[in-house]
Amino acid sequence: MLKPLSQYLTEQAAPDRLRQLILAVADACRDIGHAVNTSALDGVQGALNQENVQGEVQKQLDVIANDMMLEEKRWGGVDGQGLVAALVSEEMEEIYPLKGGEFLLVFDPIDGSSNVDVNGVVGTIFSILKAPVGKVTEADVLQSGRHQVAAGYAIYGPQTTLVLTIGKGVSAFSLDQKSGDWLMTVPAMTIPATTREFAINMSNHRHWAAPVRRYIDECLAGKTGPRGADFNMRWLASMVGDVHRVLTRGGIFMYPVDSRKGIGKLRLMYEANPIAFLIEQAGGVATDGVNPILDIAPEALHQRVGVVLGSREEVERVTAYHKEG
Ligand code: P6P
Image 1 (cartoon, helix red, strand yellow):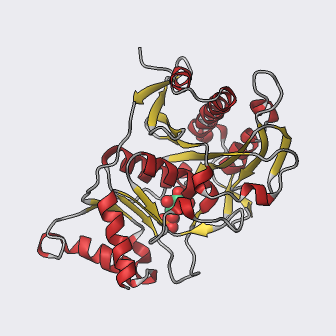
Image 2: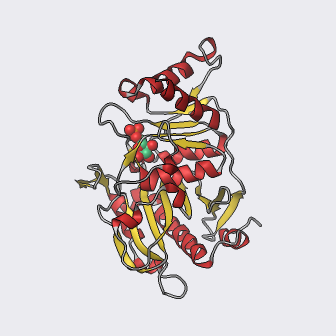
Image 3: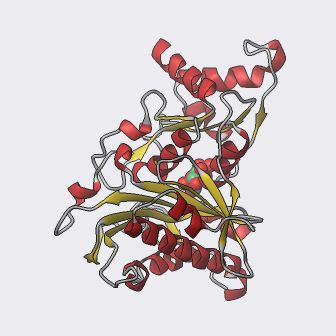
């Protein structure tokens, strides 16, 4: 019998209320995954004629998944006293106060939602922080990624899998669709230090800074180039999908700052930080191109950041190229 998520959390001596919260997040991901799976049947694919705080056209599932996360009964805890003081979502401009609890839950309810209509992989990304005593302000949420208590994602692909860290490594739990249980399928995910596989949206090549173009062009030069090896490329247009591959077999994932807006595309609080926590816990490196993502002091709830993460030696090469200029 594969180990259930609940048993893993007990064995890892997760504090009881954190354990309850992680199990509640897992339940929410199971429900969101089901909504993704039936979205064509339910006729809820496609876009709404409204934008989110990011200025991005919202998909129906973005809103449906966000609404599922806002159901306060999910976060009451077994004693009904409340586990979460406030929710923060990619889909909501402001923090969403709840009746109280010792944690903050920060999330992207559907990452990669443009993939839903084409039956591509999507996911839910979450980050758990400690809440202040009393009323939660935006400043209370703006904690660096080093303060995360737990983080993870659910990936809705051929399997529905929850990937989690509570600061003691990274484990993967696959959903048993019949029982509804999350069962451990990978006890410890580790990222090889080297790779011959990169993930980046090549159509942005002309917008990249010189160090990024240098790194990618050397990969493309293959055996006869300065790297002396051929590289492979993957790009799923779903951070969760590309990151899951990096955690499973290594690789480097890049969404660098580019010249169009001088900022990155990915969001710090509910994409880069939780993923960076997982990557570091799995022995990889996660930077904004130069500095560790987890060290960034957030200045705004929906702040964007450049992202370069994965196999240590490759990420460190990109950092070195930035420092050489
Ligand atoms: P592009 C999805 O919209 C997302 O936020 C990430 O999941 C993904 O890695 C990236 O954007 C894809 O961006 O520009 O290739 O569509």
